[in-house]
Image 1 (spheres, rainbow, N blue to C red):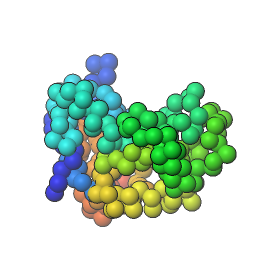
Image 2: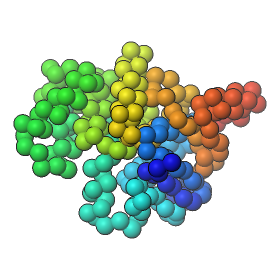
Image 3: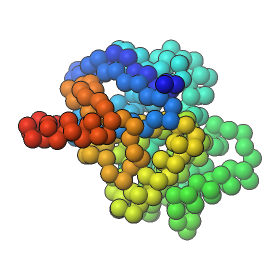
Length: 244
């Protein structure tokens, strides 16, 4: 397997409380991996650590063979241009228009002229069915569902190799979830892009996972295909041991 992300012996603490204790994880190109964990298990924190938004206390995170802890600013900048991130609450910049939010990665990471920026943004907004009447609106003026669609468009606008999705279907209806599933699944297949997604419940309406890992006790406690994990989770639920 062509590895794009490798995590070794990861430790991280918040206010003296250990969140991760020797966590290990590998993600290959073209693979979709779901991190399944209950509320408070640390899914969002883990995604931020693996994307370089937070620094680990101990252990290593490598993307494309580059260690985030020792990489130069130039190397980190190059990596970030190959990543897309969608936060649970969309995390659009509050005082920037929806169109400019989606365009931001292109304007920051590339030297494309404005006509090309406009064309690429329009393409991604159409893909996720972002209502263009909101182009000049700020995030607070539109619904959570439309903010999430704009965040998806922003995440793909640079055609990234690695996507981090934090509860991507939170706040979306069934139709929207199915649309997002088709888009991300198709994107990963066409571009050999890797997807790492956090989910609190058994994944529904999201890209089909190559593997699923159960986050429990500060590490990946169990891992397998969707079929393998479904069987394990059913046994755990019977024993009332699934983390709340």
